[in-house]
Each structure stands twice: as structure tokens, then as C-alpha cells.
Length: 314
Image (cartoon, helix red, strand yellow):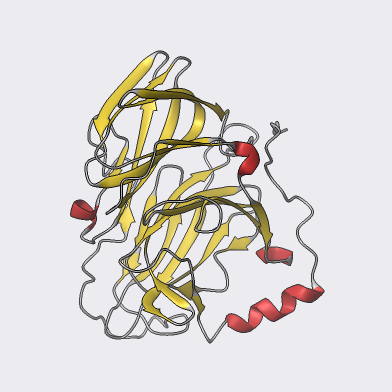
């Protein structure tokens, strides 16, 4: 459910309803599909200014052609590998079996270029995007150079693959990372925000795209996501998320992202904003004290869930 009220701290259910936010935060699997894209989020249909995401599934030997227009983009394999042609240049992405099997390589696509993706063995690919003012070179991002961070501790332990953050990879506005949360843990915690430009905080629109590990019998899993806002900019989301779902965060406090016991949770974060390319967040003052406990707690021994070397799930 998505409710339209919010304040600092987790809102109580007796708060009065407030005005509808400009951005609809919930994008269920398939609801934004427009051939050939399974997911298509743009500044125009999201109702904001900078961040975007496409996801495409290609059959064996399948291909898709598109132009980047005013966006810089990435090609991030979610499952499978592909050949990428960008104007007159080409490269091959090895990819991975799934988001839970390994850290992947990726490609950077400049704005104002014509692109063809071809998947000889089929696959599923995410294309994070941001409106860009500079045209940077077409580039390959090796999996071996992706910084893998183990963040938090105890039941707030998670893995962050910082493949396109300001410190790890050059882009104009685009920031992107992957987060893997072991079943039963919370991530994106303590709740935090990045909706005001200033000392210690950036102004960034953010997209969460989810995939959830299946049960041993192959059944679908689920997780949960929390988002809440401000008195003058209300947003209130507490929802189940499944593979292929998207949550849009135009502003407000977000977290936790909750992995149900037995079901590891993956999400791709895509961020962009009007200011300097930096990723600075402010914790909700009601819950920021939680970070102080991590110094006395161990990181979950199940982490890292993935590395550059392929991991096969039992």
C-alpha cells in the first residue's frame, strides 16, 4: 500500500491524510512495460527531472536498438551476457547467470549515440540512465574493478556493489549501485534521505529495482520497502516487493528494505540530481543512533553473497 502522509520518524496510522505527491512511488512489474522494454521509467513518465531506468529481456540471438538521446546510460547484465555496439565501437559483456551469482561487468553509453544490444544466448539487462549535459566516452567497466563493500552489522548487514558511484566510475550525473541483503536482514537502514542540497546531503532522485531469490522449490520470494516523507511533501509507502517491481523516491526518508527470512533480496539503485555528482545522505534523527551499535556487532557471515568469481546457490 502507498499512503500519502509522512513526517520525521515512522508515521503513525492516525495521522490525517495530506495531498498526493507529484510522483507515484509504486511501479509494479509490467505496469511500465512498453515494447521492447519490460521496465521503462523516464523523467517524463516518473514526473521528475533526471533519473531513468529500462529493463529488457532478450531471447536467444535477440537484439534491441535504441538511441540514448539526452541521457547517459549503462548496460548492466542481470542475467546473461551481450554484445554492445555504440555508434562505430563495440564491446562484449560477459555478464552473469543471475544477480545472485557474481559481480558483473558493465558498459557506459554516452548521450546522443545509437546503440544495439545483442544477446547470443539470451538474457535480461538493466539500463540505468540520467539526463546528462556532457558527452563522455563509450567505456567498459570490468567486474574486477567494482568495489564491493560490506556495510552495517548484525541483522543490518548487507553487500553494496559500488560499480558507478562518484569514487569508482566517471559519469556526468548518473550514480548507480547494487545492494544484496541476506534473507532476514534489513538494508537501506537506518532510514535516510537525500532531497536537499547542502553540507552533508545531496539532492538526488532515486529508483529502486528489485529481484528476490526463489525458494528451494523455485517459488517466488518477496521483500518489503518503507518510504516516508515530510509534512509539506508527504509520501508513505509500506509495501511488499517482488522481482521486477520498482519504487520511485523523489524525496523523503527511505528504509528499511527488508529481506524476508529465507529469501535474499537484490535491488539496483539509480540516482541523479541537479547538483554536483556526490552521494551524501542524512539519517533520520529518530533512528540514526543504530549506527553506533555496529562497532560491537559482527557482519553477517553469509556475506559477501557474490564476488567476481561465480557462486552457485545450493
